[in-house]
Length: 82
Image (cartoon, rainbow, N blue to C red; front, top):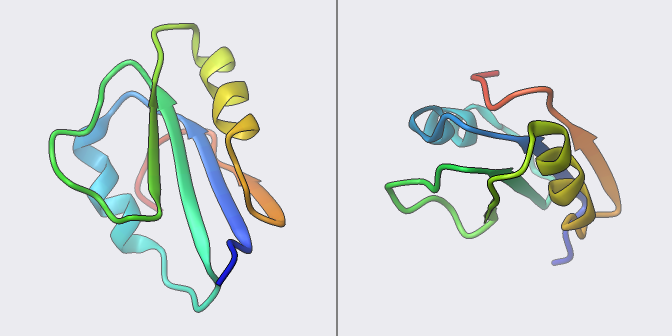
């Protein structure tokens, strides 16, 4: 199944990411694309993509957006719990 929705954000708090992943309830094929300086310490779902970059948050946001493959893209302002 192809990705329908790409959720992307600039992210720097990997301790929150599992809660973010768990808070998404949908039947749509989706991916989460985060870009930031700190990689996750734990394994996350196959549809979670992390791109390590030490550039500024707005630049990380742009990198994450350009890495999305979904038909639709939804931006998050932060890597917070929904």
